[in-house]
Structure formats: C-alpha cells, structure tokens
Amino acid sequence: MIEGNALREGIHWVGYVDWSVRDFHGYHTARGSTYNAYLVRDAKTALIDTVKGPYAADLLRHVAAYVDPANIDYIVCNHAETDHAGALGEVLQACPRAEVVCNEKCRAALSLHRDTSAWRFRVVRDGETLSLGRRTLQFIDTPMVHWPESMFTYLPEEKILFSMDAFGQHYASSRRFDDEESLDVVLAEAKTYWANIVMPYGKQVAAVLEKAATLDIETIAPSHGIVWRKNLPAILAAYKDWAVCRPHAKVLIAYDTMWGSTAKMARAIEEGATKQGGAEIRVHFIRASNITVLATEILDAATVALGSPTLNRTMMPEMGGLLTYYKGLRPLGKAGFAFGSYGWAKNGPNDVDAALKDLKFERLREPLTANYVPDDSVLDACRDAGAHLARKAVEMAEAFEG
Ligand code: FEO
Image 1 (cartoon, rainbow, N blue to C red):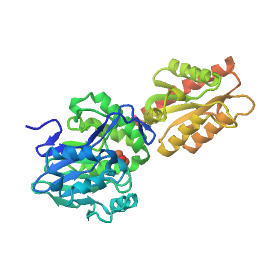
Image 2 (image 1 turned 180 degrees about the vertical axis):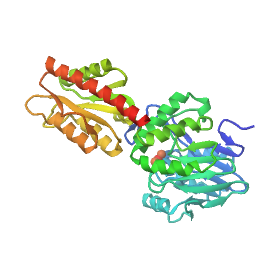
Image 3 (image 1 turned 135 degrees about the vertical axis):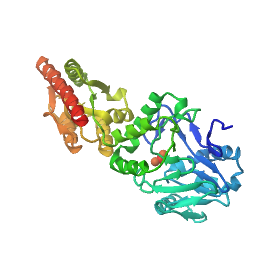
Image 4 (image 1 turned 60 degrees about the vertical axis):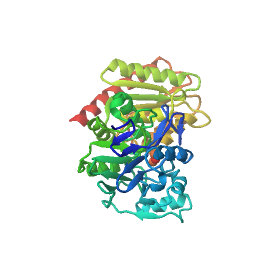
C-alpha cells in the first residue's frame, strides 16, 4: 500500500511543514510553507534536497521512518538557497557515505555559504544521468529559476519532475497532493508564489517550460507546498500566462493617504472604473494591505492607478517601498497613471509618476492631483480617469487574446 507521503512505491516526501512561518524574506506567507525533500529508495538511495537549517532533525526523523540515513548514497541539491540547502551540513553528518550531487555553479554557491571542504561532491552537467538501479535521475539545468545554479531532477521511469522552486507554493498542509486540496486555493498560492519569487525571471521560465515540454511528466514535485499529480494542465497553463504577465481586464488602484484626500481620489477613480464596466476593479489602501498581496494583484492587472500625497518632499514611504518592490519584480506591459493630493509641492504624485516611467509602464495621463482636498472638478476628473483605466484594461485583455 502507498501511504500518505508516498509519491510512488519507495518514493517518499520527507520534508518539513512550517505552519507558523509568516515572513519569508519579506514575503508575507499567510498560509505558512513547506520545505519539501524526497527520498528515492532503489539499489542506491537518494535524498532530493533538504530543508531549512533548523529542521534538519525533523528531516532525518522522517527519513529514518524508511531507511537508516547512514545508508543514503546521494543527496541531490537542486538549489543552494538556504530554505533547501540550509540543513545539508547537519544532514551530511548523519549520512557519512553520501555524495552531494549538484552542478558546478551549485557547488560553488554552497561553498560560499559554508565550509564544504570535507564534503564529497559529484558534479553533474545539464542532461547527465545517474542510475539508482531500476530508476534513473536526470539533471536539467534551469538557470535563474530561481538562482543561477538551480536545476530540476527528473525521474523518467516514474515520470516525476522534482521541480525545486518552480510550480511551488508557500502553503502549509498535512496533505501532500493537489487532488486532496481545493484547486482554487493551491492555484492562488502558486500565483502569489510566482508573483513574489519568480516574476523577474519570466523569460527564463518560458525557456524552462519549453525544455520541460519534451519530458513525459505525470507528477510535478516542487520544493514548496503541494505536489501536482492531477491538475498538471491547470498549473502549466497558468505558468504560461504568468510568464508573460498576461493582462486580464482588471484595474488595480493602490494608494496611501495622509488626511483622506488621496483616498477620496482613489474612490472616485474606482467609481468611474466600476461605472464604465467590463473590468474587475481591485482597490488597496497600502497600509491595510502588504507588498506580497500587491505583487500578486499587479501580475494579471492590465491597468493601474497608484496614488500618494506629498509627505516630506516626496511620496509616502509605503508607496516608495511598493514601487521599489515592483522595480525588482519587473511586471511587464502595464498601463496607468499616478495620482495624489499636495499642499505646496506636487512631489508625491510626481515621484510616483517618475517611478511608473522607470517601470516602463505606458503612462495614460499626467499625474492627477488635488491641492489639499479634491473639489468636485478633481473628483470628476478622477471618475473620467477611472473609466479610461477600465476601457483600456478591456482593450489590453482583448488585444492579448487576439
Ligand atoms: Fe525555495 Fe529559491 O528557494
């Protein structure tokens, strides 16, 4: 019988479920996460990835349910980032005969993180295989998904792709598989993961998807969250769309406000967009939201309005943080404008506008401003601009379809 953590006979999830993590290098992990590691038992035994450093003992305990860790022959390191390789040193102490299997860039990256002089490396090249007996590990370089050294490990006899960060989700669960969970929830977490971790590397992901399309895959086992064994078409189709930031007929309005004037403008923009119809409208007061959510919102929004009043000669700091985050994530193909109130200098909305230029967004108009408090004419202009955002979002979505 195959038990709950088994992907196949002799292939087991042995990772760690991190129910309580809420901050993953700034990513707000509202539903926790998992650090997935997998054990493949054959004539030779391989451990695929490890976990975050503090959870090494949990990993070893999970491994010991199936095999004495001292009998592990290979530990594959698909990715040197600490959430997967942090436990490697401690795990190796319990696996004295294990070789660390990774590519050359990964070997170098691991050695820059810690003293690896006593480790035994087996450096593999793109496409190289390693026989475990009845089964074979095949290594596929996937640079920049998510670091330069990242790779997938493919098990052709079982049609399993160990995809490391790709297709992952920060989602803690006692269940392992997508058909045991709500698909909507898992896809939503995969989208949030993409937006916050993978978005800057859309081009590289598109190349990896092409490479993966040549493989016969029945199961995708990422290094975070739920394993895909039923809904592969859904996650693969979503990745295709996300890789190009496919625009939906969706308007994102995000703002900060000091005494409520920029908030009034935001609501008037929302009114105009809603009245126009045809587009989904999302409104966020930044300080009641967070950058993780706002990264996810912009991924498939066609148009955006970003608002800040002037504070201390520039925009408000939370808006500055959001725009810095967007600068790193590089959402593609958006259109929009800046807005905000001011007292004696328009620096707040103007600086947001400059950031939109820097992001290479199509600017639909000059910044929309209100002197202290928006009067009726300003609010009417906001409604008109909101209608424009909605019309433009519909056009962009249709153009993409066409
Ligand atoms: Fe989950 Fe790039 O580490």
